[in-house]
Image 1 (spheres, one colour):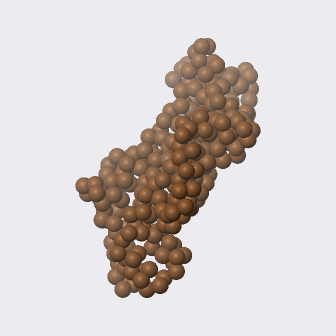
Image 2 (cartoon, one colour):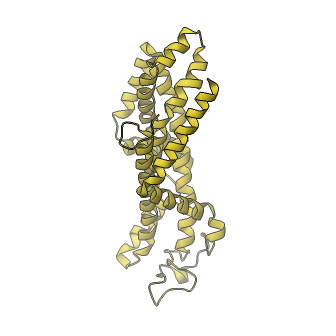
Image 3 (tube, rainbow, N blue to C red):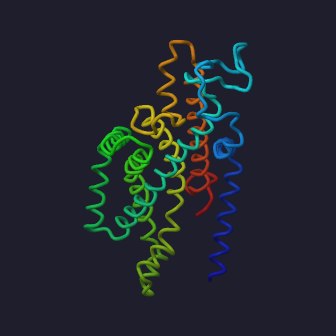
Length: 299
């Protein structure tokens, strides 16, 4: 029995990987995402200059496309003369960290809430889902802005604010998956043989509920990165001199009128590529993991 179960799981994983490889857009998203991660994580290696090295004499200078460029400053400089390429690479580490930490918080809190609400039902379900409904009543970015503004400025506050905002969404997804799984025959069989609640939850319900969570987490990470940049742009997230992408956009927009378009364009492109890659990968994972879609792997 155990060998049959392990064989089915291995076959399922192989089917999912096979379906994912067939999806060209998902592979494009994966390659883009890996490239962004490698460049940002390896910023100390790939960045040509110190991202905090300022020199007003080279402020707002264009990059390789202009004859007025400074050798070695390929994407130009910002208003303080700091290398824009280096700041984008280092800023990616900040923006992506906010997204991952916020997603981790939402994943733990939301999964716990959704599991408890879906599995136990009754009053527990009613209380937890009313809390979720209250949080859903506010637009995500507005709620994050209120929480971050109340807690105070800073990257750690932004992480917590975004995590709180996405907790109810994760709870809803998990609750829906658990409600479906707990009615299946093998769960009823576990109850019939007297299995403990913890064994049923952690050995059967939770592992079989992860497919929609994985897909939704990928898509949520893209939105979390956008919200992290938005909070930085609005001044309640990362603070100067951090190279965070949203903060870089906020500062650079003041110099668009002077013609220094590159200082705002390239951080915006970095955000755009990150979000697109995650959305492409998330769509591919959805197609591979959802058995109701044509070509999806059987779960």
